[in-house]
Length: 122
Image (cartoon, rainbow, N blue to C red; front, side, top):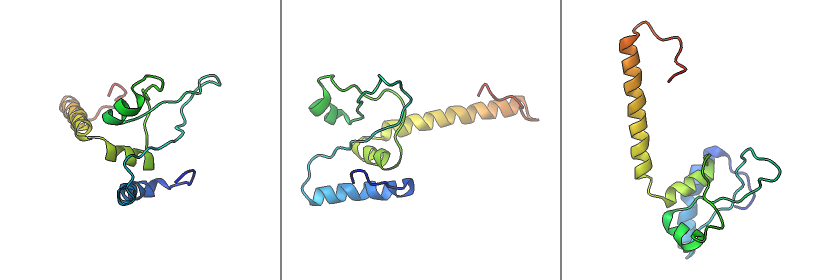
């Protein structure tokens, strides 16, 4: 894959094909090197990792490469990472957050049936 541009719409399909191909080729471990654009000063070029727990323990436990603390991945990189982690806790958390905001919207609608014009506090 190297430096080839993958349109975001095709990221999921490519990420689904990579594990199939690597397994059929006998590849036991996959890694992705990618630059993630985040605002930083000229002296703040650093390397971070995003890894599954077992990969972290095997390869990154020495602390020399810190975990990425904020931001997000999308496209192919996000889809590949999703296949390597147990996403059930994240899905559960997302459902909890969704319920919280749906409940909040219902309470606001009950309190202000004609609509709220300033929802900046949401």
